[in-house]
Length: 235
Image (cartoon, rainbow, N blue to C red; front, side):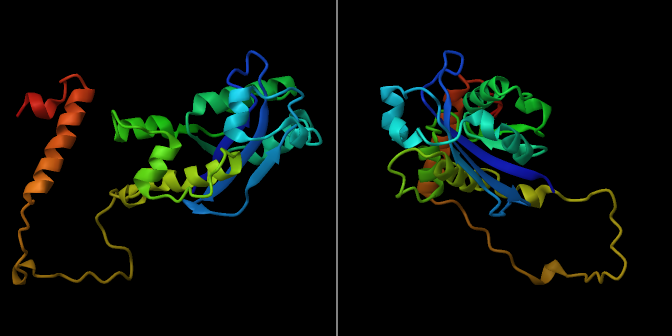
C-alpha cells in the first residue's frame, strides 16, 4: 500500500518567482485510503507582507506570523515527512512551484527527487466533470463535504477537506484491483454453485426525468469536446 499525503499551502501572493513565500503548510496522511492522524501543520514567518488580496483569503497577518519559524529552519523535517509519499494537491502546479522555491532557498533538493508522484485533483476533477466548476469549494458541495467552518482558507483545513474530496473522486478504485492472473480458487476455499434460473430478475426502466437528465449530461460532454464525442458521431 502506498503512503499518500494530501497537501495544501497558503502564501503571501501568487508568484514564488517574484518573491512571494509560503506562510502555512498543511498535510494530512492517508495509508490504504484511511486517515492515520500522522499530520503536519506549520505556520512560517515569510519575512515579508502578504498582498492585500491574499490576506483577504487566508487572514494570516504579519503580526501573527512574526514569531513563527522560517521555512529553512524546518526544511529537513518537511523533506523527511514527505519522503517517498504520493502527494495529492488541488491545482498542484501552484503549490509545487512554491515548495520547490522554498526548498531551493533552503539549499534542499526539489520535490521530484524525494517524493513518489504528484496527483493533481483539479486535473482529475476536470476529466470527471468537464465544463463544470471544479474548485475545492465546488467539489465539497458536489460531494456533500461539510465546509461550514471554513471562514478563511487554511492549509490544514483545506487539506482535510481535499482528503475527503479525493476519496469521493476515486471511490470504487479499490474494487478494480482484481487479481485476474489465476482462475483457480485458493486452497481451502469452498466454491458454491448457484442456479441463477431460480431467480426472476426485475427490469427497471429509466423514468422520463432520468432520461432527460442523462441526455443533458451527454449534451454537456458533447459541447465540452466541441462535438467530437464518439457516441454522438456513431449514434
